[in-house]
Image 1 (spheres, rainbow, N blue to C red):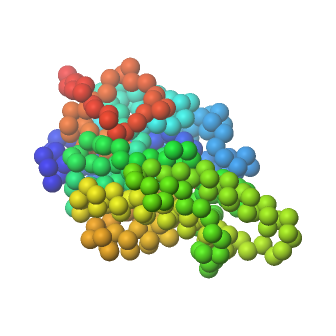
Image 2 (cartoon, rainbow, N blue to C red):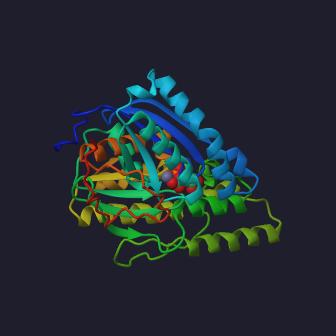
Image 3 (cartoon, protein in one colour):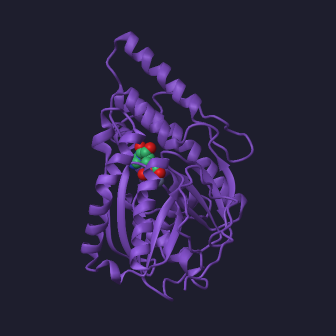
Length: 356
Ligand code: KG4
Ligand code: ZN
């Protein structure tokens, strides 16, 4: 462990707040490692009938849920606001209206309680979900972040330093799952529904395309696969034959998993790192975990993945990332704004301010 990354040091209890998409979440984490409470209020039921997240509905619901979520997180942690040492909040990337709700709550709380405010990049939060559960991991590592909005491979030579190795050129992996699940009438969110539907199915029943296979680099492309899925499904429906749903779902899942596994393990090998971290909502997919574990093992690389509840959006990961950012003096000021298109790689936090 490096200086400032050992979970000790000054201050302790960080309140994390997350509202970047359709989960309103608050959590208290001690020393960046110990989850004292983690509350996630999902809005999935609200968006289900639209087949996806409706931004305006999401932000209105965040307004209703954010204070109860914070209250519950404090209550479950057995502390009051005054016992907190800092407040960490997701400021991007995400839906601007949703981000602003969490951000406003965090600022108000930090101001009223006279506690430091810490700005957390949502993607960095996903990465820290791993460090929460596997404290023994340390850079250098390669990280595959797969969520509803992002599919990226990052090289992390040091804590807080990110080099983008590859990313999707179109849809994110989770987005591809969500869209195909919607087509199949499996509901929202699509990833878990598609995984369930794929159980017992033959992953080789349909020969879906593998884009960019054999090409150098680590980029992804899922839009061609999505279109191939759409046409194949329409064809099945037109032929009025018994619908091979499990085979179709398993084959689609396999095509996404194939691309993710091949690039991630090759990236780890090319960078000569021993550690590969899997993060983001799609990391909850068991087929992906299993295939990645097999392939990583064969390449002599250790794979780490958070438990499912920490793969999908939550505030414990934000509190953990916030804690370590704070230890490095990465404090935010009260003019912090939402950054809907925030990137992780190439970002440098140069602002170092100590609060009086
Ligand atoms: O990280 P996350 O909770 O939110 C974003 O930051 O986007 O990721 C949500 C995405 C959705 O696309 C959802 O369908 C997908 O993660 N997902 C899964 C699974 N669980 C969630 N995809 C495949 N298999 C799963 N088990
Ligand atoms: Zn996320």
